[in-house]
Length: 609
Image (cartoon, rainbow, N blue to C red; front, side, top):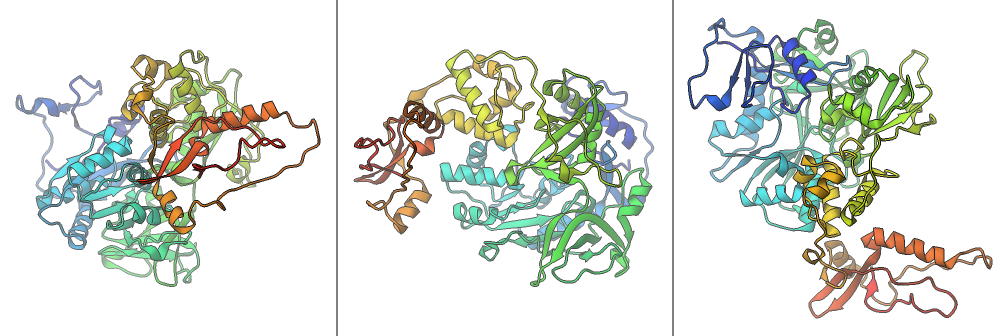
């Protein structure tokens, strides 16, 4: 039976799954769910195949190859408001596999990991790259992917050698290695799915000095990868990490609007030609004709030019650098998002007349912010999120919602996103929720407020509905553990409200964690500073302020300082010299402001760092 695979993530909302099944004209649904999924089409449950034979289905079989040898149909975000399908040729997948096998040869001790969803085109290498060469592949769980400490421990324990990740995942590993250093067997690590932050290579080398880090460039329309670059200290201080040079059987061009070559150093649209290029968009000839055009510079296997929409330039050293986008497509935590699709989903809410979405923040802290013009009063963020969850994956749901009177537009009538930040707005409030009651609930509420930038958090609010995401969940768990709460990332996903977490057994166990009187080894940064400058009498930062008498309320200032230092443990850090070297501890704030002869704040040892 000649067939095309249409991978669908089980985490997608039902409406999105139904759209993909309907749009792809799928004939058979293969799943691993014991219960009937309720879709009106023939299906096979993989869980039953071992116990009995698969049910017979009458499908037309053919020994002829399908048109253009299409292997899979991958659905991705679309500016039309509905996910669009990209046709991936078998030749494109094989080209990537053969290139990887040639460039990064396996040995007898190698172990790969599978961590990407099958609905992503990049998963082909993880699923087949190792197995077709007899190399074992470790399938990571969602819990391991969400918890950097657990992930690093798993990679080390199973002696994983090849890891293909995104920048947020790598940042998590770096933070974990900084907290709990452990040796690994890693010898090839790649970063893709979104632009690599300029700070990532140097941070990676600091904590994984013997593990090369490669920067991959690609898109669904070019079978995941088209260019590659090995990072090094030569990139330190650069604002952009290069994506390097093309892989086998691929050519890259930086062209202007008339498809003329841009000069070296000048920005233009990145266009891709070669064996990696997709066969176009499923049932969308207009879009295919716009994005896949004849190549004026070559023919044969390079005869079709994919216009990526990425703005790029070629450096004087001949390396490709990605500078931005020519449209509203963005990447958040490795996921490709068309802002128009989110806006369409928002405007389908009966209480929203108009919506505009922008990406806010940098690197690992990027999130979506939605500005909405209400069609009626009493609109809550919980109500909006509930509506969006029916059609959008969780990574496409905005972290915050703002009420505005109007959306600014350009002369051509398009949303003027550059002016959105200057439009007066009111925060969309959450739905009704009870206030924290117990000690655990108060601690969690304070942590959530700090992480999410919220003025107030109720115990019935959903962490991921009020701005939380996978990265913030890790930070939440880290902060909770520091103050003695027993909390895991998996627990936060299973019970995402403070009320549920408290009922699920989250408790303060201060004796499990270092208390104010216990000491710990200092961090590498402090050790390095000690070698460079030392912690002698000259090491202090002082300020002297003269204020009119009666202007300053000393008691209020003391309370304010105590509150700030209580919330930020770095301000309570003390460094002491011991027989075993420098040690650090965190102490409760007990100092007072310096008044006249009061010497309670003098710099006695152990000194603050």
